[in-house]
Length: 97
Image 1 (cartoon, rainbow, N blue to C red):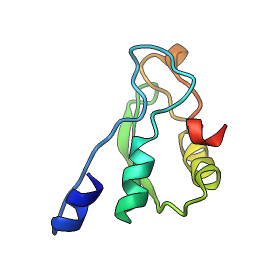
Image 2: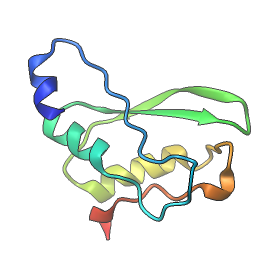
Image 3: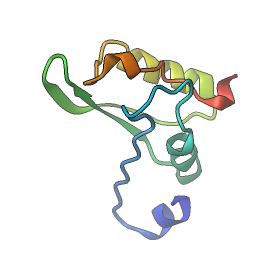
């Protein structure tokens, strides 16, 4: 995917790092690595089931400091609730441990 960003004038890629099918301890990190390697921002989208809101929030430009970047992402999603809040996990990547 990183190579595809280099060859396309316009490309939007949606990668959900967490789903609601089962609880996970860690998010998949592919979205972060694709954005880092491609030099593109990570757009933080959301579906807040509790408040019946959806949208596109801020953008995070990967700095290479995964923990710092993920702190921004965690802060953004702190008050967003999905349809199954009991299955939510804190946004955390394996690379942070």
